[in-house]
Length: 136
Image 1 (tube, rainbow, N blue to C red):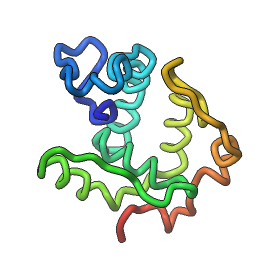
Image 2 (tube, rainbow, N blue to C red):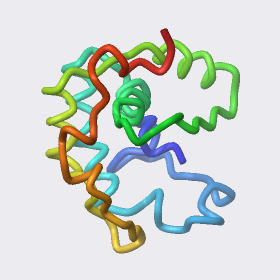
Image 3 (cartoon, helix red, strand yellow):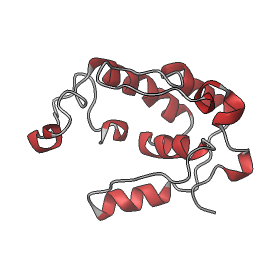
Image 4 (tube, helix red, strand yellow):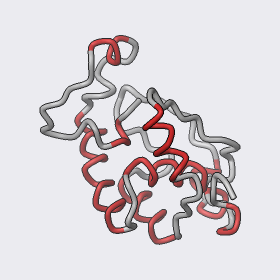
């Protein structure tokens, strides 16, 4: 919904539109989620990636994920996502992300999830390095 684009940041003047907030009020302004974004920004920077590319590569690295659902609203958004489709994260970067948001942990009481073994066991959470790109 845009949190992992880096557009909405803690203390930012830009706030999500009323239309964006209509179906999920508070999700875009939740302090725990915004704090996680702030911790993910330097991980993306250290990896030499945009936050968007980091997020897409993270999702695709999980072996239980068969496809990433993207929601570009503009051609520029789509072009950016396609440019990051071949991004592969190394284990150190994946571990850093897991430290920010531990697998299976809800950041907010607004989120409720089942914690399957694929989230709690590292070897089940990551595709082998040769299979981590969204496109080859």
